[in-house]
Amino acid sequence: MTGGPLFVSSGDPAADHRYASALEHAARGDLAAAAEILVQALQLAPSFATAWFALGAIRDNLGDRDGAVVAWQKARDADPEDYHGARLQLARIGAGERTPAMTATYIRRLFDQHAAGFDESLLERLDYRAPAVLLAAVRSVSGGSVRIGSMLDLGCGTGLGGAAFRPQVDWLVGVDVSPGMIAKARAKGLYDRLSVLELQQFLAAEAEAHTCYQLVIAADVFVYVGDLAPVIAAAARVLAPGGLLAFTVETHAGDGATLQQTLRYAHGNGHVRAAIAGAGLGLRHLADASTRTENGVPVAGLVAVAASSASTASPSAATSRG
Image 1: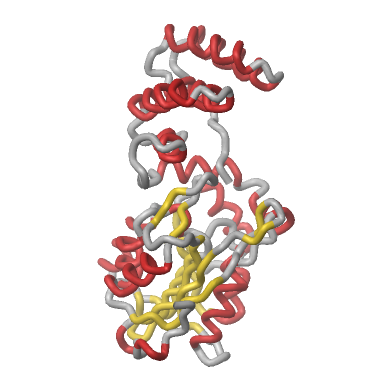
Image 2 (image 1 turned 90 degrees about the vertical axis):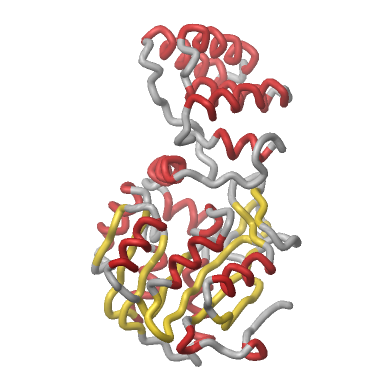
């Protein structure tokens, strides 16, 4: 899910009009004319980040890499919150930072934009199965029987993870940065508590309030996080003694994190292990697991389960692919 730019006014009606005209030309396939009109719009409103971003996308489609780099750099510089994801596009084509952090503003826009058809898109077109993969992994670590007093669903989205785990959970909490996603989750009536907040902010507040969970899950959430160490460390601080953290990631052959053409991160086996160990957790399960299919091909991934110190297993007990 990459999402196109949503309109944000330049504040200049003439520039906005030219932007709209450019999109009409682009929709008809006349990309060269669209690019020319966007340049005219930007002459009127040089800090028009949305137009710069669109110009970068059109130049990229036209094969003008250098021109795309210039436009996306202008979009990035005009919008420090990176609403459209210009820094990610620059990284995707090998310019600028290799692994830029996704801003909360970008992620909120992305998921608000797709909230209406999110479940249909994942379940019917992408064969999404992350919640089932996580539930199976937690059952494996728990010896088959799962009864959870309190669970936190990080990046809960529309509640697909909550639906999978609800029968096993007494108290279910969900958090997501997207108000649109939380509205969908609330309508399902699955959660005892829902919050709209950036994950790190929420986890910090929960830790300060000494709130603990027996299980914390993140179903395909960390694909929007470059460095896993900070968020896993934050999640570890809200685990009850003996609590479990279960999550999925997309993966690649290397050990670090890499931004893919899909604008999602893939994490190597070594990166996952290091983040878990750095948080003071014990690895209980790490295995290959694909959570979605794209273009008819399962996307390579990992499922991990880590435990707080009260139930940390010895290294030999951890399930691993090596």
